[in-house]
Amino acid sequence: MSFIHKNFAKVLNQYHYTFNPGDIIVGTIFSQEQEGYLVDIGNHTAGYLPIEEISLTTKNKYTQQLILYNTQEFFILAYNTDAKQLVLSIKRLNYIRSWDRIKQLKKEDISVQAYVKGINKGGILIEIEDIQGFIPNSHLLCNKSKYNLLYKTIQCKLLVANEHNNKLICSARCAIIAEIMQDIKVGSIIQSDVIEITEFGVFFNIYGVPALLHRSELQEKQIQQINILFKPQTVFMVRIIHIDAKQGRISVSLTF
Image 1 (cartoon, one colour):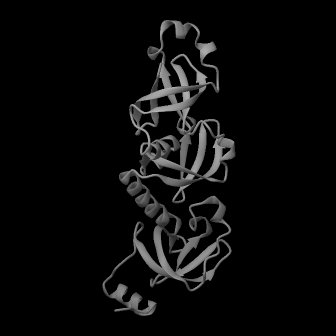
Image 2 (spheres, rainbow, N blue to C red; image 1 turned 90 degrees about the vertical axis):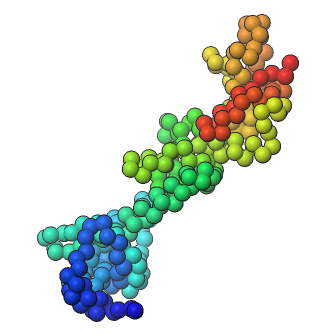
Image 3 (cartoon, rainbow, N blue to C red; image 1 turned 120 degrees about the vertical axis):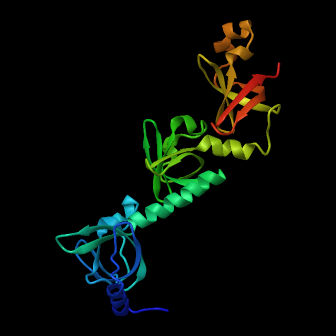
């Protein structure tokens, strides 16, 4: 059975039902104000939707125009005692539902496309389902400059998805490893070029993932000549000896 808003208000009065912060309700936007919108929610007074409670994303926050007389769901954010008015939010409702989808993606352990919205010293800022996340430098691909990723999409996997702390950490390397594991496995021999030499050993480029040739895999003579033998971009045939799909790591050994 459906009710028009006046009849709905009578039902509310009859059963002494009150709206509370945290409730999700249905309302109809009927007026645009200078700093927000008035929404008919079938209560004694109209609900108020501030502009800043419309969109999760900054780029749409002050430009998104809502359609008058459109009926949709709203989250009750608070009660303004001075105006005797409920403060509503679309942003909070979208936030809750976005995190539900993100947690499901994490549970299914699947790769997703993320929008790159910013770059900083430690990595890149991304958005998934309008929730801001982060990919550290240690989980970016080594064959692509992060500065070329800005305002583009990147494939990644979710490492940490904590709604309570609003923490979303992702990895491009884990996404690539999940993809290439269909073609390579432990024992596979692959041609790869040297990226860099570190105190731990030599890193090779395997599909954009830095693969470590640990010093323990080298002979003493090779260690002594490591800077001569393993110059950057020098190509070697290496054997995959370990794949850590959860942490985005690959270990290799030489084939000779």
